Length: 203
Image (cartoon, rainbow, N blue to C red; front, top):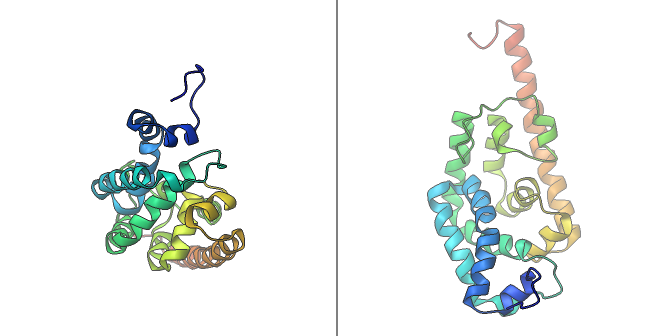
């Protein structure tokens, strides 16, 4: 516990008692929930958050105290738990592809006007259905890296920390997934142009 009057660091919170750890939960639980909800839906996300912080508390002695933030470490725990939800995640992505709906329920309609930008910084609320389908087809390890970069907005170094892999591996996996998503976007754009040229989408 920090008695200096200054805000406790994540390292101090993890080294403290349950009350200190509760502060860490309050600090990051919503962030982890939003990430998990986008991947598997809000109901399962609640369980992911609970399990993430339970495991974090049980393994707090394993936290790298040289890190300035516990968030990448928490994302890593959550991502490992999400790997067990592969079927639910694939179902959520396919539902998004069918309905153009953000898994968090933003109510926004997906368009392709930002799809090229989404290759480098993906946003679920404006991703085309084709990109969602491409995400569902990605190998789990590639999808984990991409979504930690795109949705969690982690740096390469933070992703490496979260997944316990090298920065070079992060870079190579992102390059492969970008190629897949870019191809999906190009295919969609070509099909859309053809349909528009031949009478539109039926409207």
